Length: 259
Image 1 (cartoon, helix red, strand yellow):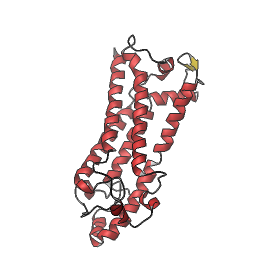
Image 2 (cartoon, helix red, strand yellow):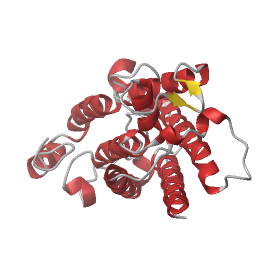
Image 3 (cartoon, rainbow, N blue to C red):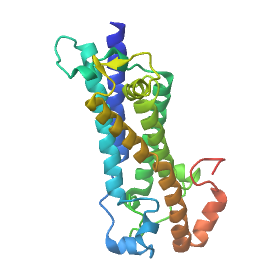
Image 4 (cartoon, rainbow, N blue to C red):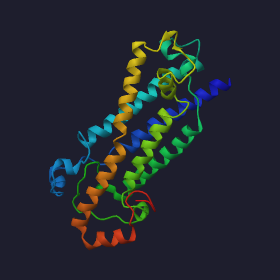
């Protein structure tokens, strides 16, 4: 009974993560027009620094990868809750992959929720001016209150919250993916999964997917830092003295007292 409660709670956490990612990474406004983007008067790489694809594609891929990570773990957890009603592949039912909720999971969930609400706050403060592309809307105004009175790019701070939440919930100690990697690397006392050796091709495919997702999201902090710098340059050029006064009052880009 205790195991079922733990696994049920973990499934709810994973579902909450998917909901948070959906809303925090869904653009609140239509994409910007070419005319609006041209107000930056910079090339594509400067508009989306550090990216190998358009920002909307990058965000969509991040969301989808989180959905897949969570769905696979939920499938692995369900037999513990409904042992006689589900027939799943044996490699997903091994005790060596049973997940639980570690302190890292709870901390990651709290940070994820904070990041999501911070993103929503920014959507409301910027209203029609908020876009995922680096652009200046028509009648664009400089917002300097609310979270923008603490750091100049709180929406990007929220992205860091999503990043930490993704790592802690999906890859933290006790997660399905943590257990899978420790088994594969020989760090677990278990020698096999689902009655097969660790070389089972399906497990290899899962390991490859999990590794690719880790590499993919590892770029998020770098991209947010580069975008905040590029955005500051354009806002300074567009708003002039108004932006300078804001920077003097709010000297930090992403983290109060740090940077």
